[in-house]
Image 1 (cartoon, helix red, strand yellow):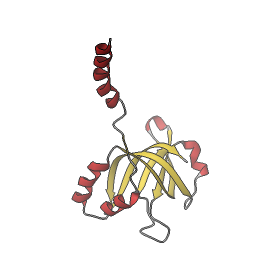
Image 2: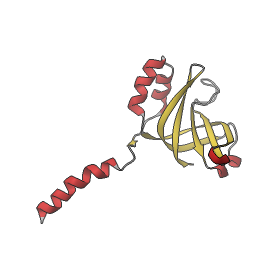
Image 3: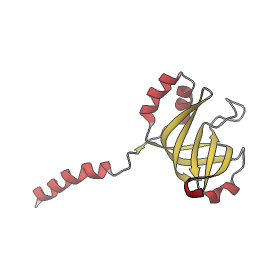
Image 4: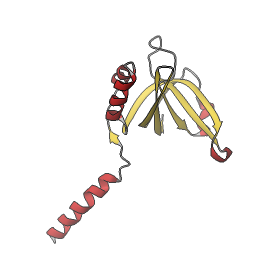
Length: 139
């Protein structure tokens, strides 16, 4: 009986790990990410591979909230967050993620926002890096 239970655990354990969505739980502060964002494109791309898939819990300020039409003209909403402290860095979005359309009217530029999300991608616009996240919880 023990051997059967052990065999089941050995077979099931990798499957359970594989089913976690590939998300690595992390207590990653934004400061080292900001530091890496300020480096050249190749250095940031290499750093990004070490943080991709991590679940983060960050706070920032709303830079912009936008509504747009997605596939089949379904309304979508996106939040752009400035992660720099007021008076520091550029007044621009550092991260973006899709939010429920119902949250748009509750968010205003400059408002503090806390969220839990998974780091998925990044894009570089005018020498600035913007992280694309998958929202898990908007506080």
